[in-house]
Image (spheres, rainbow, N blue to C red):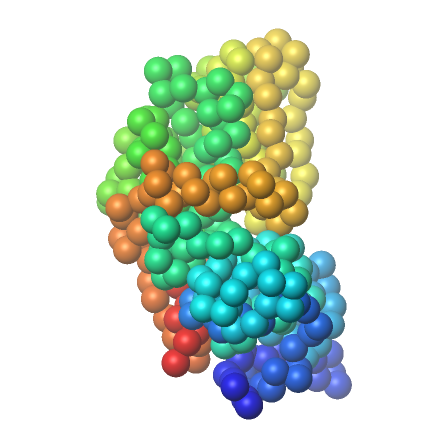
Length: 331
């Protein structure tokens, strides 16, 4: 424990950013009540933004990204956990301005962590990670708003991405008919193996985008990209349906009239996984470990080592990654 490996992002004098796996010390970690030996993390789009110096995500450098971490407790100053407990950390400030899961150790406030449910391994928990947890919140939002499988198809945008791919699988497991929208039509078989009943292209979704309303096609939608794709999802949702919104990789603008809301009673539900309170967080993780546990986790996952993360950061920013990228952190 004198030193450990971590991916370190450093800001150079010319304001560029470099990344390398290097040796760090526990003294380099921030203050906190809980010290965790990280076994696994996962790569999310936000991690790539942090690793390239995006000021909307991370401002303090040098810095170790990784908004997800699963591992074992080394010590806990407030006795909330005991040594050896297996815990999961997603969200809060982890990997943003607090050293994150791309290092073998993290030190955080103990109330950021939850006990790993018995139905999941640490590895499975990080295949799910923030992306899968967000997908779970989205599916749960549809269900709690009265969307049921008998009411029709559910649209998922950005379906090959981390959130989208898990959403497709979760919805299919819950009995929904899923229409997966992607810019990677070559991955149609991948999406159908996850449970999608139909795969459409972005171009198909954007047809007639100038219209204020579209034909009622979907009982609900999980939008992961925002912008005109979210607008089209709202306009094509049937009476009383619900659209969840959790991403903005396409755009943070939403150009849509009020017609779908006041003429069809469509609900738009925002999804936030970062500050989700601990009680509902624990309940959903319990569901993901039990009735919503996915048998296809390995099918949507590529496992890499800490030294291999660097190249994957560039790939995810270019939209070249499908499914989930699991990071094996522990030596």
